Length: 600
Image (cartoon, rainbow, N blue to C red; front, side, top):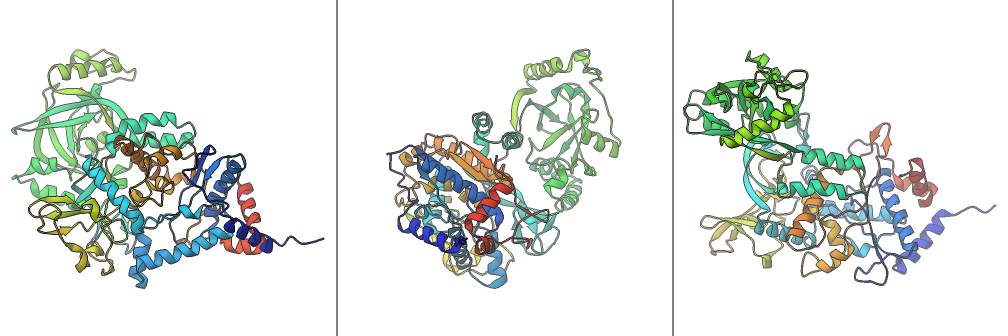
């Protein structure tokens, strides 16, 4: 019996496919119906593993099948090539992030080619190249022009040992992933994208995504977090000041016995200014800065707080209520202040019992109002509406729809990311870089120490510049953008990646969007998938595309595990596809990974 020589046969046909441009797709060709098949692009870490093989094999099956059915198939590949690992490599090994990244790309490209995947490599993009990030910078400028980008102060994760800001994902169990020092909170000015601009659209349009897994839609729905309630105004005693709180339970307002303010909120600082309680606030803030947001939101958090010497007046009962700062209230939720209803909220109850405060029940087990003045005896749902009506009539509050979703903090104190194209002028303030001067290039004369501010501050050639508006001396922004910005629009650039005149040609994008089949990990259900949806809606608002959703069908392919853990380079549990291909052939490796756990 003859032996199937997979090595000889696979190499022969892969060469034929390459020589014949078998998978090249002219995105302006209208001779056939279009089909856009896309897998989430990888970070170029240097080696692919069987988790990658699963993702790309599924996409390859779909792309080949649709091509055989007579479609013009767009099946591109590229690299999410900005990011912290390259910077860590620079610190550890003294190799420049660009050199490290490009070497990894070439290595991974060879590995993917060995698998015989049907990619149109002419469509390749790498987010860390000036040819790509020039357009990321132009997008930032368009967001700035259209009031979708802004700068404000906020608290960030700060490692006192590394003397640097950390992204949330770099904080592990409250400690710096690099040096294991306890992370603190520090207030800095940061850039934001206004994701809240499309809160309702992001939520409502989930109902149009029939081709998405229900669990992903539910995760996004919960993250956006739409709720109905009321804004209620509480007058501060002996101050010309009113505190507005958002509550989903206006029916419990008669049970409000105290107010809790986030210790890091400016409101707390204003309330104690010039009083003996300023010191208490500072001491409590120092304590809070060692806690992560996850810890402070945990149900089993041990409640802690301080009375700050002020009182508010309950607008319905006219009772005086003490104002406290507490560890379970966060500045970026609602207004940074919460009305304490200990009889009907578990966290408020824990806090009230810890500090021996009054607990007044106002709804009985049957859902009837008690201890609620004129509303006593009403059903709680009836009282919900009636109390809001009274607040609105008396000018003390109003019916409100609220969202849990917050604006996206995109500032990163890192080198290996897209430079933010603005300068700071003493006379003109924040000034956008002129479009003709894009891209703002990353300098090469930087030091990678892992200490202090962004490495961009060490560059003599980068910092000093001229104000585009007045021509005087100015300073460049030294923060770079979150790498999720790069991956929020790459699927559009693929279709028109050779365009040197603009971000993309809207006619081409309108033809190829939405992506017909998107394949990738469920771990991206919130951040990447939500941000990509937001980008598409922002582009639509700015007249860049007629589409409002980027991905028609989504497959979350599951994770390939080794000894019960997700495969990753950092865990050292990678099974190399290269060894599999060399031993059994590409077809065998691909067939096995599909049949071991069939993608439904």
